[in-house]
Amino acid sequence: MIRYALRCDRDHGFESWFQSSSAYDSQVKRKLVTCPICGSAKVDKAIMAPRIVGKKGRGRAAPPPEPAAAPKPEAAPSGPTSLMLAQEKELRTKLKELRDHIVKNADNVGERFANEARAMHYGDKEHRPIYGEASPEEAKSLIDEGIEVSPLPTLPEDRN
Image (tube, rainbow, N blue to C red; front, top):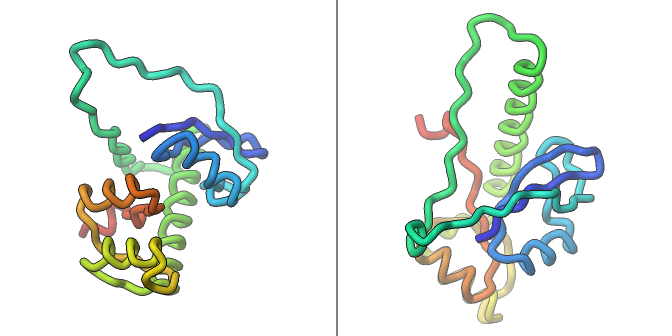
């Protein structure tokens, strides 16, 4: 997996993970990579320092850091903090809209997700939008076969 720092044509910065450099190129070409703030599909890689792993860290990949939950403000903040809270709220809203759109417009195939995705990829079944459940191993196997999959976004309030 590769993490890229990205920037849209309106100068919004954000990060995203890709299976490979060619997966990034393919998704940008098909306008699948969009700015989470403004929705622009005109996205380029931003300058990013490489992450180098020493000998001790080789062989065991650290999981990507989970975003920390923002503390709930006691009073209405002002300045940069209020801008961050507004951006976080907007991002959460867009993620929820994305997930709701997928759930509304795709078939839930449940635990058959990996098999259904494979059958469509290899032409055994007609292509259609689907979502469902897959273990991390199944998802990695699909990606290794060149089948593009993405997790549905979840938010902390979804876990209640």
